[in-house]
Image (tube, rainbow, N blue to C red; front, top):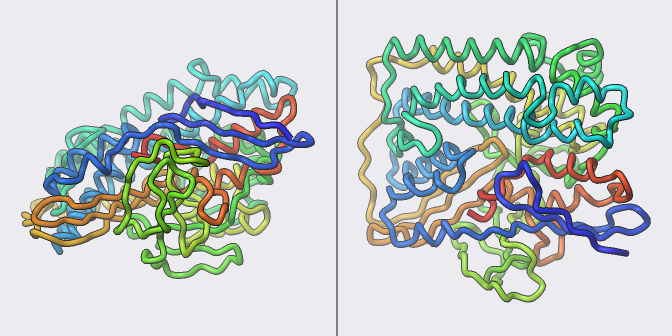
Amino acid sequence: MKRIQLGPFNRVEGDLEVSLDVGQGRVAAAWVNSPLFRGFEQVLVGRAPEDALAIVPRICGICSVAQSAAAANALAALAGVEPPPNGQLAQKIVLAAENLADHLTHFYLFFMPDFARSAYADRSWFGEVAGRFAAQTGASVAPWLQARARFYNIAGVLSGRWPHTLALQAGGSTKAVTAAERIRLFALLREFRSFLEGRLFGDTLEAFAGLASFDQLQAWAAGGGSDFAHFLRAAGDLGLEGIGRATDRFLSYGAYGHFVSGIRQPTAAVHSLETAKITEDAHSAWLADRAPLPPAQGETIVAADKPDAYTWCKAPRYGGEVAEVGALARLVVAGHPLLQDLILRHGGSVTARIVARMIEVATVVPLMESWLRDLRLGEPFCLPVEMPDSGESTGLVEAARGSLGHWMSVKRGRIERYQIVAPTTWNFSPRDSAETPGPLEQALVGLPAGEGALPTIQHVVRSFDPCMVCTVH
């Protein structure tokens, strides 16, 4: 048995290292290290509650709206207010724009360049795939960057700027939309739909989102010339639908009023989500070791010399069990037939995670169009809010990479405790006090680790779309 270390990984938001125990050419065990500590949870202590809206978006430059939305939800719950319908719609549109852009940025810029590696030069699909997705030079890279820049104008219109907007507030959204701006937003969505249907899918969004089984997905990809069809053929050749399986326990907070919340067990049973069952375990982290605590009671106390720790990341658990979050979790908990079929056949896999993101893109763009139509121009987008002197609250949202929660405690008008559990904290969590590995650590076990195996390991790691700066804040 020998140990090898991979990292730091490129094309990842933040720092990531993976250590592997290898025996007989296979990964026998994995340890995932989040080596960058940033301390946002301590920075927030002692500040006015509203300060969170200016601070937490700075946790990340790629999913800052999700952090804003979670903080705004926590503040709304603390104050006991509900934003007006326009404010809720505007918040959903801005968050959806960021999430969908993140999905496609992951696909085009972070994930697919690995398929252009020389290790695959003998594959029949290599020339076409490398020509489309090679880093910087691929024929699909520039069109995506142009489409992304145009699409983010939606966030500009609705929230003034991206990233780090201050428009999302406890009372709703501070930017009221005019009739002319709504017309512009519709035009931006039509332009984005054109890119998706013309290049990514080569089909209508509704037709792709309606695929109901793995067999239908394979038949759809067989004769297609779109970017995603080329991925599916390459993935099928490499057998990516059969690797990268973790627990098959999926957790979702629910999103957009469309995807329901819940916990899907490995038995395929879906249960209502009980947030009281969420805990964080610091057993393997360079943090003071306590019994697993609910985030509302959590602490972030550095213990850099702690023996046997190997990461700054805590281990979130649901009822003491490991759970995976992300687009795949959202779609499976919501009961999408294609993702249910993929899970029943092969479990959570590299292919299933990528397919789930694309199904979500195809599903949510039409929803965004309907939310724009539902805006009632001339009615309020934001209500005035007065914060209480003391209280506790929780703000839950679904970021692109999965379930994001902010737990806040306020005393005498100041933040007494602020704890954040981010999606990559769930998926890249270390061993807990029962020595149970986290989702990625489980997903890597059994993979080939001999000569030429590195792309396979990287496919599994990248299928979770790690955002390490959010992991330990």
